[in-house]
Length: 89
Image (cartoon, rainbow, N blue to C red; front, side):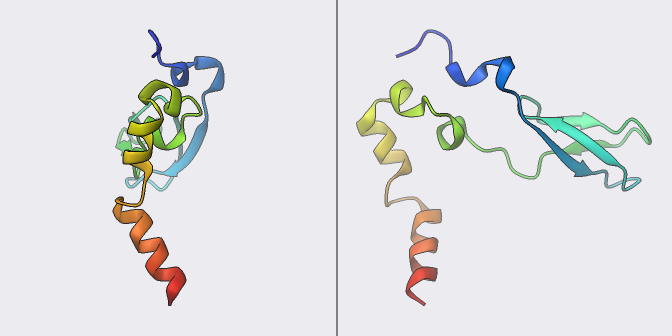
């Protein structure tokens, strides 16, 4: 286990561009932010979906331990079942 999450390294921030629902302007939201205020019109712009660090962090297996990681990322997840169902069709 880590004392500090290695996924919180500010040197590895990612940015995504979203459309402001108020003025349709472009708004940048960094990977460590959940929302930002549009600089043009002041509307709050939220991320569409907040992924869990378990889904994107390369150190998730180490932080959780292999068994727990497999339980969370394993076959029981609805997303996994849906993908398998689509593949069969």
